[in-house]
Amino acid sequence: MSECPVDPRHHRDVVSFIRRGGRLTDRQQLAWDELSDRYVLDVPRAVSSTSVDPEFRLDLSETFGREAPVIMEIGSGRGESLVHAAAEHPEVDFLGLEVYVPGVAQTLVTMRHENVTNVRLAVVDAVPALSTMLPAGALDELRVWFPDPWHKKRHRKRRLITDDFVPLAARVLKPGGVWRLATDWEDYAEQIREVLDRAGPFDFSGDWSERFAGRPITKFEAKGLAKGRTIRDLSAVRR
Ligand SMILES: C[S@@+](CC[C@H](N)C(=O)[O-])C[C@H]1O[C@@H](n2cnc3c(N)ncnc32)[C@H](O)[C@@H]1O
Figure 1: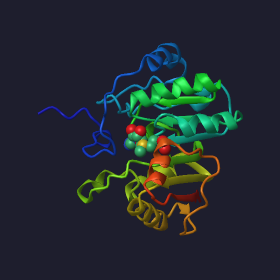
Figure 2 (figure 1 turned 90 degrees about the vertical axis):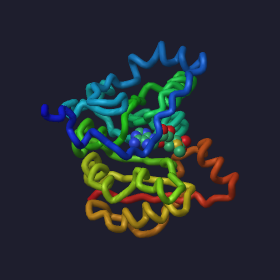
Figure 3 (figure 1 turned 90 degrees about the horizontal axis):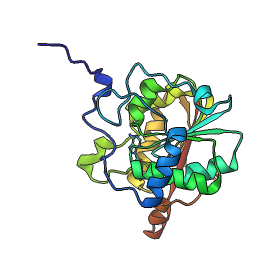
Figure 4 (figure 1 turned 180 degrees about the horizontal axis):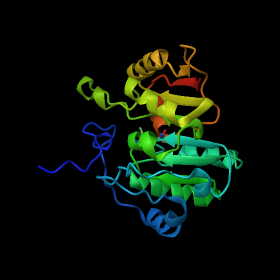
């Protein structure tokens, strides 16, 4: 029998997302056609269209064309928070990881509207991206806003933020780098708090943080608020 050519780290049976197709609107298609070459990374794949070739290393200064602090958001969705932050901080570079292509295309629409150029996007699963694609200690900040909550008990194993994710976040953050998270799902908030409490490479107060002032109220946050949910912010610092 021939050897499996796939690095087991990149063959993921349980992932934190369901790949939704979804057509692009005309505006999204136009933005994609005009801007994706410049702003969406051309990632060599291992197996699926959200995987990363384990040999591929991203050179951030080449990608952004300068040396600057880098903040990464996992699951940047339609890019509401990412583009808002990038517009507020032109001196910082922002990288968004998102598996939902219409979300990435919508981010390009908003970038053009806001005249923002300090953002790059990658259509990749965060797990292989953090395992090998990003250089170790490359990030000043890692943000995860409203990760898919996977409400049902039997689906919980799909949640992104577990003990297994901690070494990946620790790998990509600089010492002193900040990991910020927010969720509107109380059970997930508690789980994240427990994960951070046990996370050796991070300093964590054990308590909720103030709402992060740099985050606008996104569609997801608004939905949670409308349903009367409590939004929980958490943050931890890489030792
Ligand atoms: C609930 S949405 C929140 C979007 C955005 N952060 C916001 O606050 O509006 C979660 C997003 O995370 C993305 N996602 C889930 N798992 C991911 C993964 N492993 N890598 C990259 N993106 C992921 C989903 O496609 C989805 O767009």
